Length: 168
Image 1 (cartoon, rainbow, N blue to C red):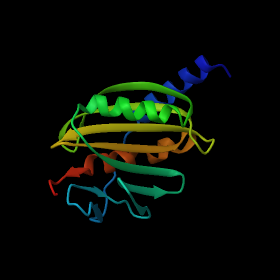
Image 2: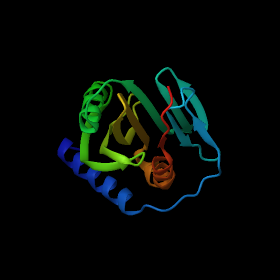
Image 3: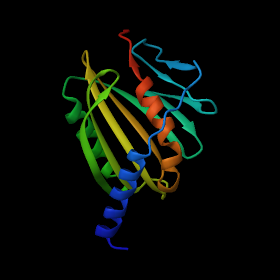
Image 4: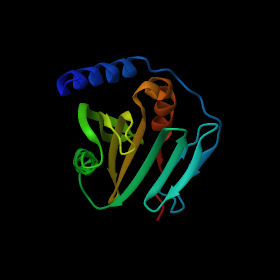
């Protein structure tokens, strides 16, 4: 399959996933950053894995990761800088759509990508960034291409439930 055809198919799948959003209600389980800077809802059945610079929520091959970085800049610049790093890790990493968005109740920047992830699996990735109080936050949501639609509503619920809380 040509790169152009794969790119068009990826864009079509992303568009279909965006149009099929549903509402998911989570129990009150939340992950709270030890520094008190942010929290995320944790869906039933998802595992929490703390990272050096954030946290990951994992359910099989689907995951949501939040990365916290120190520094000033724009939400768009944050997403673009992280996207450049990911380009080296994914094959056929293609940006399907990017635009301003609301993230943690603030003006952010979000982008959709597709390609072959480092595990060799065709996947879809949504990345959103927001800058606040000298910190940058990047929210990653990814699943294999064939499983993205079934995870879309859960991803949307986690994204809606992401909160910045101040902290130290």
